[in-house]
Length: 197
Image 1 (spheres, rainbow, N blue to C red):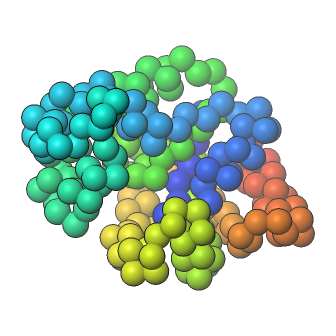
Image 2 (cartoon, one colour; image 1 turned 90 degrees about the vertical axis):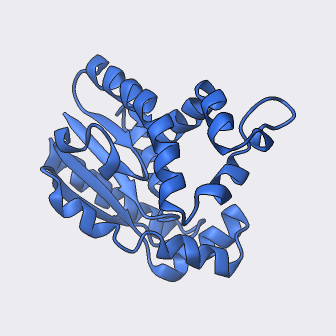
């Protein structure tokens, strides 16, 4: 059984992924596969986007690359054409190797090669100002930069209406340290897993 896990920027999907792993579900982090693909395909990236993206250790400067493609559909499409094929191969290989329930954790789940094969999707949400505070505290983004990142995901939820999967929403309210909110989140997740069973 394939379960997708996703959420908008700073909604807390990786926190939910850790909870699922604690409950014994194997979780594939597609974002990490993307980082791997940046390294395996770095020569093609340097050829297209410029050798100045190469850091002193030979790796891709992800921050600079992000600045180069953000808000530029043609450049983003060029990057995806380089990175997506190897990522899709890794996703398919991992999914084929699993038995029982497994989770695909991806920020851009709707673009995944496996999207239309998902049985269930766990969609992590959080209030706007909670996400804004997380973006500022966790990633050090200015308020303006965080708002631009949020604006780029304005059509996020509607993209999941096309899914063949049953969608389960989990609201992640807390910033950190609230045992009451954490317990509530765990209970909500356990109820979803019961339904998925």
